[in-house]
Length: 455
Picture 1 (cartoon, rainbow, N blue to C red):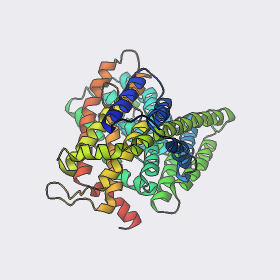
Picture 2 (picture 1 turned 45 degrees about the vertical axis):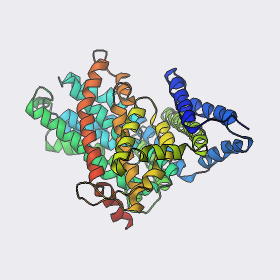
Picture 3 (picture 1 turned 45 degrees about the horizontal axis):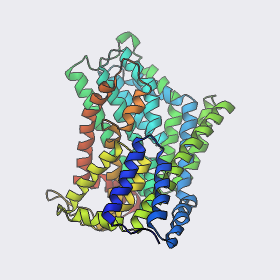
């Protein structure tokens, strides 16, 4: 029999220990898993030991999670084949005559890249290496250049095939296909807001984003020739998303199609070599095992907390605020942004979603400002996409937003951390506007899934 402790003190002890160990620099997977085991033995009883295999084994046998290594491998093959750099160059040449064209090209390329990759780190680093030097060379405002890369890179967490959506679906028992379809319009909405901002800023003050010099531009015929070189990877993305949205294939089957298609595209570009395949396989292995280890550790940690009554404690605490459903949702959003300053997105999902989703599905969201609300059967899907939009903000939030440090790791020395922090602020405001819109107008999320799958 373990030691007796109140749930309030247990909450403080568990999450306080988690923060201290993470600030000490220990890996998230082993901190959560190790703390879960320690608290299980100290405060649990003999019967609770069964929580260890019961929490881990379902992840090891979940069919939907097999899409994660497939999508990561697809992205790695395309990246090793150099197709991502070509994509950026083509979009810039097409838009080069516009003010802010390079920043716009960065956001569009990041949007397409998000549909290939599904992971923020890869997009931020890739675009930081390719796009940032190109913009600085052409005298773009450094803060706008950094902001365009930061904001565009975070779309990888939202636009399908998002790895976050797959894990959220597994944890919340939600359809992966519905989450993919529901996240598409919010992702394009945010991408559009970013493009509108950089274009308007460049036309108001041309020094922020000068157009490509006339002698470097290509004519219409040249643009068509350039587009032909990236036709295959764009067609591949459209094929993968198309078979998901039309219901022809499940997300896992679509991931298999995409993986095979990536190999074909790389072969057509004459860049399918054994060293490239080996590097892509190793990238996939490292990323997939990182995700799974975090899932194992966090599921043990949260599993013990829920069994001890933590979920009910959090629910009662939020309901006691008396703020109503939308007020509780706002508190959750703030908490997620704060967590994003310190934790990896996988850890946040596995720590927060098992506690938040049951509470969300029990509350009536009747709508704000007299607008239509969310039907009870749609709340889980709606909240899932709202959560994903919110996660973008957590990645850009100074001082510890992960995307800020991804970019700094590849930025030139004269691009300071303070400059990167300042560059994130306007795009954080745009993300907050996007979050407000999907909360107030839930049809932005729900319209496309209803069209694809019926009511």
